[in-house]
Length: 212
Image (tube, rainbow, N blue to C red):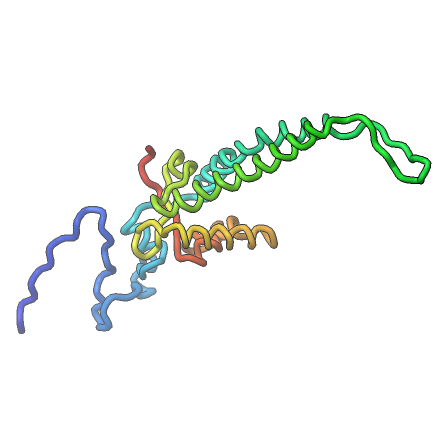
C-alpha cells in the first residue's frame, strides 16, 4: 500500500474543507450520528468553522438601524422643503364671475424651492443607500452600520464579499418580502443557518469580525 504524502496546513483564516468521508465519496456532510452540526459548504457549522461566528439577530438589527439613520440625512432638505412649500402655498381662494376658482396670496418662488428641496432630499437618501448598502457592502462586506457593530456580509461558501450585483439583488428581495409579510429579517430567528430570506436568495451570511 502506497504511503500518502501529508498535505501542508492551510494558511490561517483560509476555508477548511470538511473531513473526508471514510466510506468514500469525497467530502460531504457529516453523518447525523456523528453528533456534530452539518459541515457542508453553506451550512452554519461550515461557516462558523471557517469564517467566524454567525451574527445574532440583535447585532444585525443594530447595524441596520445605523444604516437607516445614515440614509435619513436626506430628511434634512426634505423637512426644509416641506416648510417652504407650505409657506409658498396660496392663502385665499374665491370664485370669479365666470364660476372659476381663483387663489391669492402665497409665494410661487418659495413653493418651487420647497418642491426642489423635497426632491433633492429623496435623491440624497436613495444615493446614500445605494452607496452604503450595495457598492460599499458588496465590495468590502461591510456597510457603515456593519463596520460599527463589527459584522461582515460574506458568501456562505467562499467567505468572500458577494459583490455589488448580488448585494443589489439581496436588497431587492429583502424589500419585496418585507413589504408583503415582513419575514425577510425575522426568518433568521428560526432558520438553522441564521440566514434571512434575502441571504438565502444570494447564498450570503453575516459573521462577527473585529470592529474598526
